Amino acid sequence: MNKHRYQAKELQQVNWVQVGEDVTGKRLVFGVDVAKEDFFGAFMLSPLESLITIKWQHPKETRALGDFLSTLPAARIEVALEPSGTYGDSLREFLRDLGFAIHLVSPKRVHDVAEVYDGVPSLHDAKAAYLIGRLHLEGASSPWCEASEDRREQQALVSELDLYQSEHRRNLNRLGALLSRHWPELDRIVELNSAGVLHLIAAYGTPQAVCVDCTEAEALLHHARRGIANPERVGAILDSAKATLGLPCTHGERHLLQVLASELLRTRKALQAVERRIAERVNQDPPLQWIAQAFGKTTSLVLETTLGSPLAYTDPHAYIKAMGLNLKERSSGKHKGRLKITKRGPGRARHYLFLAALRFVQKDPVVQAWYHKKVVRDGRLPRYNALVAVMRKLGMAIWHVARGQAFDSCKLFDLKALGMAS
Image (cartoon, rainbow, N blue to C red):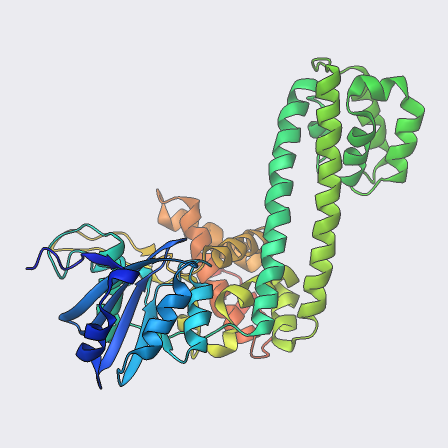
């Protein structure tokens, strides 16, 4: 095997006249390994015939590359890329505008064949470009379908939601950690995320400051009482401020508590605004409305954004597979491996479906009964396995709900086996 197969030339050092002679009237595949700046590309005529591998700086040299590609007298030029986040989007759009067909190659396929063709398990940029081109030539690719403008709007909306949620969670954890030092009784009385508590801390910072201005603090809690609906709880908060075991704050620590609470109020308000926009978008789409009635508006939009519409899948099993919830097994001879999910789909979709499964286990008596029976039956297996099984059931239900069927948990389980048949 030629040890120089993956040797790459700089873009300006390539003899484009010679390349043009080699590809005249032929099908040319350009396999591209995408990075942030250092791109590699392999020109291939067949799975066993790699003409040359090049490297160039993106975006600095990309226009020059386009000029060279446009002059090649090949019968047709096909470009194959991996979906490498957002780094390859500008190149893909640029080459598409030049009239080249763009194809998608799964990164998992590239990883899996790293050792197949040359017996060496290493994977580097030049080799990845060759593997991408070869996989495309062998039919292991698909045409790259651009997301519609509406889908991109949804993706931006969900990303904005994630942005505020992650920031909110981090700051809430920070606030909880600080209050366990300075006011440890507070989160035993009320959720720290409640608007009233956040307004109280933003205004006063410390329990000592609350005690100094107890009347105004009580009025503030009554005014912003969302999450503190019980007047007795307001009294308990004020009493805990007087008798706290917490460490008194320094001036800087008090200011930090106030800043954290103010930031949490800001992100809370931003999250509410994003959720209103999500609700407006869901209300314009009947299948999303049907899913939202059972699973919530945010969950319905996240699933459509990450997986596409359930209507695009031929059967519920295909939808489950797209989520990465289909099962895999590794068994050999007498060894029987445990069934696990593949996790090949978008993690964001599984995360929201997992939260939905938790809600159903808590609130739906049929789901709850099946879940507890499975936990007992599985014995030593973690409860997480039973929740994943609930996720699979719910995923199949979503496929049917999107087609206009009302959600009914009784249709997902054998009621006789659960002892719930009427």
